[in-house]
Amino acid sequence: MTRLGVKTVNKVKATIAGTLNRSLLAAALITAPAVSTVVADAFAPDTAWTFGTAAAQELIRPASNPPEPRRIPGISQRLNEELSEVQAFIDPEEDSGREPDLGEALNLLQEMESNISEYNAYEQAQIYNFMANVHFQQDNMQKTIEAFEKVVARSPQIPTGLETGTWQILGKLHMQEEDFAAALDAFENWTNLVTSINADQYYTFSLLFYQMGQEDRALAHVNKAVSMTEAEGEVPEENWFAMQRLLYFEKEDYQSTAEVLEKMVRHYPKVSTWRQLSDMYSLLERFDDRLHTLEVVYLLGGLDKENILVSMASMYLDREVPYEAAQVLDKGIYEDEIIEPTARNLELLANAWSLAQETEKSMVEMEKAAQKSEEGDLFARLSAIYMLNDRYEQSVEAAQEALDKGVDRPDQVYLRMGTAYVNLEQYEDAIEVLKEAAKDKRSEEAAKQWIKYAEGEKAREEEARRQEEAYQKRKKKWEEEDGLVLPGSA
Figure 1 (cartoon, rainbow, N blue to C red):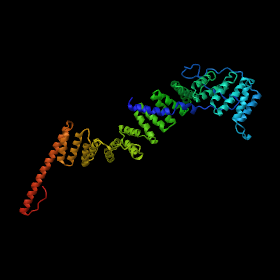
Figure 2 (spheres, one colour; figure 1 turned 180 degrees about the horizontal axis):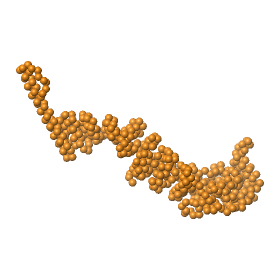
Figure 3 (cartoon, rainbow, N blue to C red; figure 1 turned 135 degrees about the vertical axis):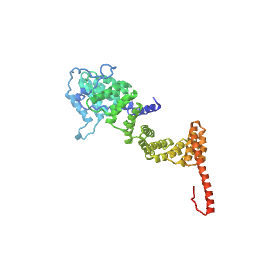
């Protein structure tokens, strides 16, 4: 992998991992419901989950058959009245004028607990169910968990729905408390209680396995959640895609990461996601696709980093689209002030304008670039640009500046300066600098040809001058002898 590739991977990894921090997942996504009803079947069996019979099983499967029917003892009128009184303290009637009093509700429940043997197993489970609710509302998670554990301890003399729902809540609470082993144990107790697992539940399993550091199992379960939802013609939750993206990226499966990101920008388009997709295309060396995604981010106003803008402009140049490259650079330097007007960046802008046939703009930017450079190479290039645009005096000046600062190929600069002098008809100066160019074997032949041409032009110029001088002498003599006025030149 190239250095650019390694840097891109590190950047993307930091971005993606930051969206799914292990310590934040459970707290953000898992919320245990309050239990404030005496109706046991409020926890429906078809909303519970199971881990199957083997912990080593890659994908969790529901039980093949529903649990056997249970004979459940009834709830006495006495308990209904006592729990109604507790409920009145937890959630008073609106017209009662009373405020909730969780402390008094807990006192009543604890008094009932002190005589717990007077109640049957199902009634005991309801008492602890209420206690769990009160502890939860008091933000006492440990007591909440202990109370729910006493509920499931009354199995099998409680309805399957109550047991299933309670194990579900316990699993969530343990996840919230970051006790993942206990969460796994709670979920495993659902194995024989349910016959179906829905997509939401598979996603929660994925979260749990991710928290436990079992990334392969986390990926298997989030993939199941996504595939189930897509099979129904629906769009999976954004968090599900985010989990897939993270897990594939951590496995260095960049192709699959890109495929997930392609879904995300289609269903949940965000600037940050487009940027990540662009980075994936770069890692996959899909540079045309990378440029297309960068164009989207640019249009959305999401490119605010100099290196990315310069990279985008360079890609335009590589694809022979110089005008767009120049526009990106010009806006980034002068309008948005994101790109530093360094010699290198200004030179790139000058090149872009030149390739876009914007000669004047190109010269302006190259002049700025050369002035910012401590080396002579940019002045040498500026000299060449002046030559191409018939600005010979400026070409000579830029060439001299390049030689003063130092260049890699002074012979080329001397050669260019010599041709500029020839075009200015300053043949002696031309011959002098061309002789310097001829000292380098790489420019010797071309320099000698130009020297020969300059010497010839100089000789013709001198001969023309001699002829003119001779004619002027004869003209003057004839005028003095004959009094004639002759033409002023030969």
